Image 1 (cartoon, rainbow, N blue to C red):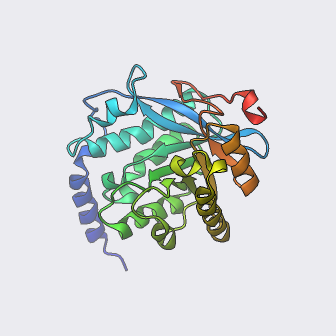
Image 2 (cartoon, rainbow, N blue to C red):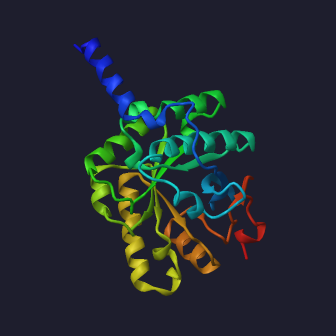
Length: 262
């Protein structure tokens, strides 16, 4: 039986540790979003929009991320989640929304997710339309803690995705410990894959593993019809990249109709 007093003490301690996340404390810099479509090749539709952080006037992501530090990391992560959902709702985006998050900015997943749940409720966004995406290359000090966060998000009803898969520190070990809903193949594996036997062999192996595990694969960084065609024939139906559409600042990205067949 859980001790209610202990629960209250833990929440109080959590509130202190997460003081930087308290509502009403604005960020000391501004940011906005661009949205890039992730397409479904099978039915030529938009599967999701990735929310990509930008400066208030469309400046690149680094103009914002360079201002993130230990003092504001928690507030920034919380603000990103809420603003991505709020902006997508304002733009009337009906497809899924993929939101990047900072795993090292999560104190307790069940506590840190509250503002996201509230934003989704306020804007009538079903939780299965939200994808939480984290790069495999993110150095997470505690691997088991990382998987705990992702499992909690899945338990809440969110989708989870591992970005830049194949380029980071975890690799297949991460898949052994946690089964995400999606992985995004790193663009270094995608680039000119139709001309590279080694890239083809690696990607085919990953696709076979993901199929056995029930993980959906997204190929990101698609820039040519050669890359598109090889990956589609190999079994990848979800793709993202400049061939289909560039990020649109303060707007829902659209797909170039010629990208389906040119």
